[in-house]
Structures are given as C-alpha cells and as structure tokens.
Image 1: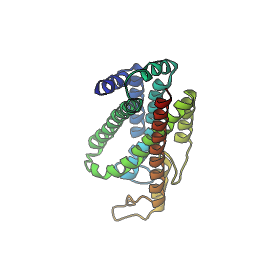
Image 2 (image 1 turned 180 degrees about the vertical axis):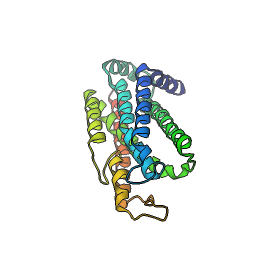
Image 3 (image 1 turned 60 degrees about the vertical axis):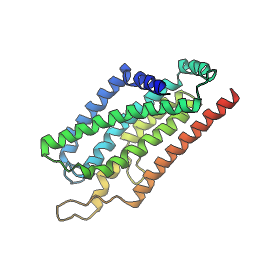
Image 4 (image 1 turned 135 degrees about the horizontal axis):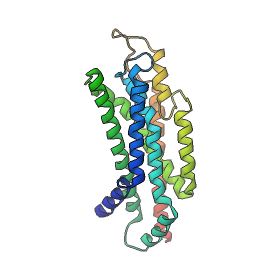
Length: 244
C-alpha cells in the first residue's frame, strides 16, 4: 500500500493541473492579503484572529475547488476502467480508497501550508507580528470542517455520477462568494467579518476572539457530516467488493 500511496500522491501533486491550481491558490491568497486583510476586518487589526480567520475563509473556496478537481481524477471513465481491473486483483478496495483519499488530503495539506506560510510572511514582514498561537483556533475552525465535508460529499457525488462533482464546484463558488453570513456560513468569511462588530471592545481597542456556541456547533456538524459521508462511501466500496 505504501507504493500505491506514493504513486497516487505523485500522480496528483506532479500533475500540471494541480501545479496550475496551486499557483492560482497562492496568487489569490496574496490578493486577499494585500487587498482586504491589510486593512483588517470588522474594525480589527490585520493580524487579529478575526482578520486571519477571514483570510482563510476567503481563500478556502479556491482550495476546496482544487480538492474537488483532484477527486474528478478518481471518477473519470478511464479510472472506472482501471477499477474493473483492480477488483480482479488481491488489492483491498477499501484500503485502496483510503489511500487515494489520503493522497488528496496530503495535496490539500500542501496547499494549506503554503497559504499559511504566505500569510505568516505577510504579518512578519509588514507588521513584525509573531504571535501565531492566536491563529490556531481559527485555522482549525476553517480548514478541518471544510475539507472533511468536501471530501465526504465529493466522493459520494463522484460515486453516483462524475458530473455531480462539477456541479459541486459551482455550488462551492456560489457559497464561497455569495455573501452568506451566520453560524452556518460554510467557509466562515461572512461570520468572521461581521460577528466581531456585535462584541464589546476590550482594553486593546478590539473585541476578544470569542466564537459563538452556534458557530462551533455548525462547524462540528459540517465536520461530522463529512466523516459520516466518507464512512458511507467506504461501505459502498466494501459492498462492491463482495458483489464483484
């Protein structure tokens, strides 16, 4: 399985489409930092957890589009033909599916590391800001639920029909740039850029980073749904093994 994982990972990250999308992710992240975050969101400093959370939430739609695009590789007609041959081999399809999901996860992690690194360089070079520990919570609240849900629903959609993944890409764009706010704001930009206004200002002139219970519950729901959908997809794979 290690060899298969290395092969799948290499197939994704050395793909010209992934490299192109990676460049787009970084270019868009730079645009958000210099065009929006540099002024701060909701009257907070550019390096506040609120502004940092808004930054991640703003760039995440493009990152999730990349994840969904990578999933299309696994549900193409060519891949379906390969899967027929795979079912005739001793390879465990469940483990094979998990290995491929792991390769997508590593690809997403690479994107996130570069996006985070770009923002940290931005904060250090412009503001000499080093207190990155305050960014841990907003990072977890944005990245984990978004990736888990996208992987879960993306794999299930691809299993039903490959075209549904492209439909999900369109939904991602609408949700990501549709100006949605509230606790169930999937990417969270509307939440991070509006909720601080309703909070009292502290001695430092900014509202403390206090996330509402409703938003935390919503993030847990997205994360849980993503895990559940991935489990369902794995069971479908196991059932396919028994019927093959």
